[in-house]
Length: 373
Image (cartoon, rainbow, N blue to C red; front, side, top):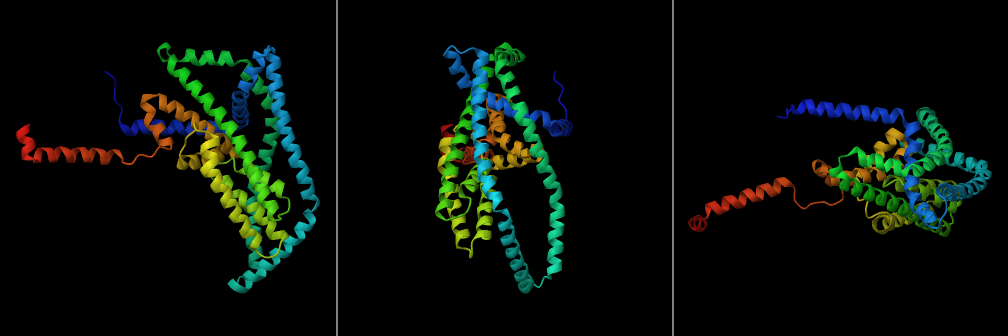
């Protein structure tokens, strides 16, 4: 006979296990983040590597060619951004002067309308600056982690692809032979979900970058291509990135142009682009396999950011998509898969049960039905 433990004991054990799991993720981020990115890149490059091997390219050479191709592409994007950034930094002194003039006008306007002295305003600004120092330190730490990621990523990716068969055999042998079919389905669906999500994400980012840059060029905003590309990269973060991406062009337009017509036009253009992205690009391009509802997506992105920073925000959606695939295949976890998914039922279980009970009462109360029974 299986011993049944009380609910409070089981919930305490589960909560304690989750706390330990999050604590481990937080403290091992420098190790786990490069491994996670390498795993995604390995899955993404796997079809290209298989194609090279079908062309009789040796396994090691095929892996090295695929990794080299990926990093040349990444280096090209970084080089393009650096060129655009160099022209931006050349005009930085002029932008600082204009920003100081705008800030001075804003402070005097606030002092006149809201009766807040300039010294008090400066005190608020200084306090805000002090509160941002930890954030700046965390950003520098993230940049240092990015450099470490650049060196470790190709090594981990190579090893993941090279030992692919060994890792797959381990996963099959970990579970009972009777579950091998389910394990195979989960692995295939997980690989397909990651590949379709990543390819779709890259295509979506390219389209959004073109739309952003075109809109800003038409509106005459300085550094339109750079800002459009940064906005597309921020847009990779679901729901949150698109909102953050609006502030940079509005800020640049406020410094470099008079009036507020350009800022209003930028907000309108970005709202239209976000509408196109959310209603056409994401449903039909990004992935039809990683169907996570908006609530879970936002919570997951925020939790990923709290644990692993920007890397965690990016990794959260594909990983939660894999979890959903696993939950959908395990009978005891299917309700968790439904919670993560985007299929919204019209009635909840309580309404269904109540309607069934009401129908039964009506049947008993009806004398014709009772006589027929």
